[in-house]
Image (cartoon, rainbow, N blue to C red):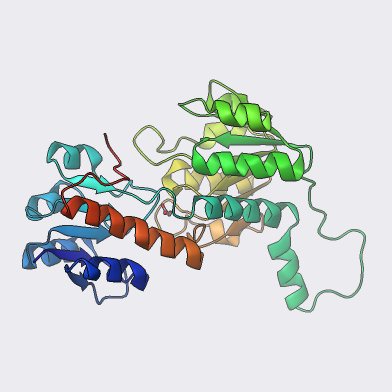
Length: 323
Ligand code: GLV
């Protein structure tokens, strides 16, 4: 009988899809991310055919080495930087992600961060809760207007394109973007302009939003020198992966008013924050929840289970992360 290991509890639909195929499904009973050692111990304990992983599970050569019976690691995530893709490919192990699960929601969360910053929602909320609101005051919490400004996108895949659509349709923004692959659709649909370098985009944008996968070439793609190119009134938003931005340099840039603010859903060393980040009032911080809706989590469970089923039934899963 085929067996599947799931590294943390996921919505029931995914588990029942696997059980309905007659697979034995073991779900980790620890309601927290597994350490690499714990994952290795679990994989040594039983010759699993498939593993459903979360973005917190490091799946590298050491893990592949003990997972000799495993045909697929199916990530329950859009991102897959937790996989050593080259190593998995070399060993012929299928690696998948859930690209459709929650991408539109990540774009919405990106906009929530942008609006929270520009309308100073978090600071103002605290002000009211602390009983400091004593009456209308023309001088308090002046934010910044978004309409008509320039959105700079670093990465214009599925999520970046949806952020661009909202910017163009909702706020009449100009859109400047950079990506390693040109997205002509957002050019024709939303008037986005392609720029050949990250620097080109940073210099002109009022809001810079990052939507690239994390890999060697995007690690610290935005560093301290890049921040100095940005407008002092600009906001930097990250709903992609923390290490794409040098977080220590960002704290310095925010302290020294090199840029005006940042909205972060992801952090360089999750769940830790760079020293000083949480003490700044010009940042809005959320705990890696950009895709957190019931619908998205449900869709991700279906997609990841489907990738496992396709593999174990002898097919090629729909969401391979390598070709
Ligand atoms: C969340 O960050 C994801 O990659 O799905």
